[in-house]
Structures are given as C-alpha cells and as structure tokens.
Length: 312
Image 1 (spheres, helix red, strand yellow):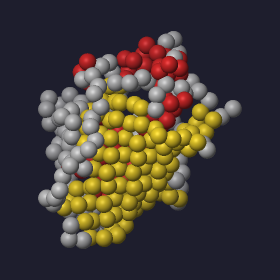
Image 2: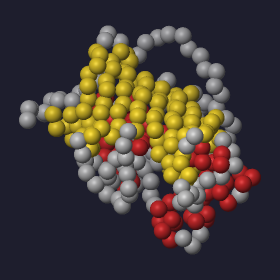
Image 3: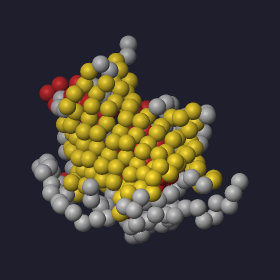
C-alpha cells in the first residue's frame, strides 16, 4: 500500500473538533466519527455504520460519506454545488463500506467527481458530485419560505413520538432515542395522520439543526445537510396516504437523490426543510424539498424518488 500520509486535502472532523462548550450528544459524536472516513489508498476510503440491529444502512449516511470521500479529493477553494445519486442495493451495516472516487474532471472553475460505494464486491450506491469556485453573477430568489412557527416554540420529534406510541416499549425506544439531528415538525407527523385521516397532507415542514458549534469547514455543513435530507422526504409521500412506518403495511426505500447547494449555510443553525410530494403511483413516489435559513434564504433544493410498496 502506498504512503497515504498526505493524501487528504481537507481536514477531518473528529469529536474534539467542535467548538462551544463541548456539549454534544452521543448520537452527534458518533455521526461525526462515522463521517471521518479512513483513507486506505489514493482516492479510496472506508466508512463504517453505527452498531445497531438494523437491516440496512440509512441512505443519508451513505450519501454523506460518499460526499466526504469526493470532497477529500477536491481543492479547498471549491465547494460542492450539486450531487446526483442512485441507491442500487441495500447497505449491510455489519461490514465497512468502501468508497472509490473517480476524478472525472479538474477544470479552471468546476471539478467533477464520481463515487461508487462497494460492499461484498458489488456497488450499493453511486454519486456524481460537482464542485465550483465562487464566482460573482446574477442573483434572484423566487421561492418564498413558508410561514411556520419558530422552532424553539415547537416540541422535539422525540417528545411528540413519546406521546403517540403509548405503551409500545419497542417503538418508544426506537423513536425517542437520542438523534444527531434536532428536528422540530411544524406539520403533522406520519403517525398522527395515520391515527387521524383529517391530517393527511402532501406537504411537510420540518426545522432541523445539529445542536453543537461545528467547525467552519463548508464541506461539513453540506455533508450534514445531505445526511438530514433523507430523513423525512419519503415520509412526505406516506403522509399523503395516511401511512406510517411500523404502523402500515408499507415497505419503502430511496431510489435516487439529487441536491443543489445555492448559498453557504450552517447546519448548526436552524434550517427549515419545506417538502412536498407532487405524485405517487406504480410503487414509486416523488418528493421535493427546499431548505431555508431562518432569515428566509433558499440554500438547498432536493428531489428524491422512492419505492413505496404495499405488503401483505
């Protein structure tokens, strides 16, 4: 194996790299460690999954780790502006994931990378990501942030689910455990719409932030947004039908995922994730999302198609 001591061009983000008072919940510490990929050769990285009894790797984790791998091969003056990904096979959480980065282009202002995530000798995920040197240019924003309550006035996701799952200890443990992302719903949860059909909607508004003072590296904040982007998009499709994970005879999985990053932002500040599902049919559903800063700036656009399959 070659000398890998000077291969990474961007810093890593260990659990000791955050600022502030050092208070970071265990789930966020673990996520930062998961994103700190091991570089095993030039353009080859290895990542692991949380030690949990789950059937497959969370799609947001694979997307985030793949983006880390791509970003570690790009000069610091170029920030990611878009990614396009496909989820090909379920990820096995019991073994590492190897990320192979292909350097497709290094232009004067744009850089393009392709990442293939591999397990058991087969591709489970592919991503193309494009990076861009900052340039001045025309600017406008037609999208308007939805009017929703301030996040501090809303209960946490864990508090809302604690009341909903009642005396079901296994579900309560799963839904109320510490999470790396503090999510505050300004719209009904899927479980609420499952219990009350009048709450069905094809729109979801969720505030989220990572509750710690994070490093200033722009790549980290983009990666954390990619991780969070996969939590609730499929839920928006389910919400339109009054279905909920663990309560309905439904099986779902992300098929593809695309993101465009418009402006710099911080994932440790509140971000409103406004989502809608314009269509579902044929065991598939489409969901779109826009991320806004608290001041109303549109910073990220997201589109995802998912498999929504009814089971017996």
